[in-house]
Image 1: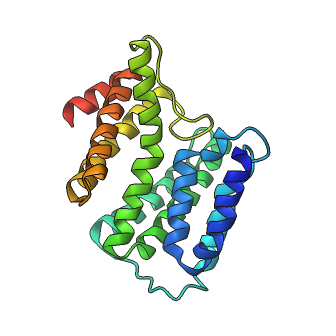
Image 2: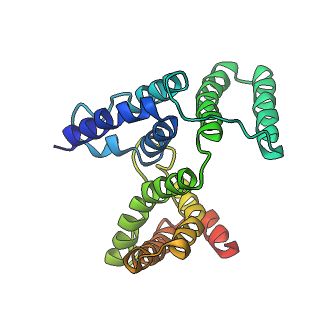
Length: 224
């Protein structure tokens, strides 16, 4: 059932992603961060969902009627310089095979980041992008918070298997990063049930941070 649900969501969203690049960015972000396919039990687990969505999103650059504009602000230039520097340092790495493999992964992510810069142009695009991020990570914060409260913090909270936030440290830091974004959406929300829901999600995510037993995240949440 979960596999069919995943298939239905992606196939249903791809035509819209082909027409609107920003929808492709949102879909790719959801799959890449939340790893919803890893919650399935059959064929969806190992299917290349992110690659398919990325391909359609890149194709949409030539089919969309939306205006795309790269913001050449200083932070964007710094990011480009950083990517170039990563390529230079990889060329002189002690372990070239491992380093080039990692660089290949990083460059794919940076490519989608650049497309996001050009596609997410309006306030609604940015806020939807924030929603995708906080719900993708907040899902595990919600689960982890309840898990910690139920068990009294006796066991660690872990992220989705096979993802960038699989480890307890990675998940905890990601939660620390999105809690302020949750608060932003709570402040700008006009409906009380959304504000209350986001407040509850913030609290459970904070509990999940402590439940991860991550010392680095403890320092980060103290600074936050």
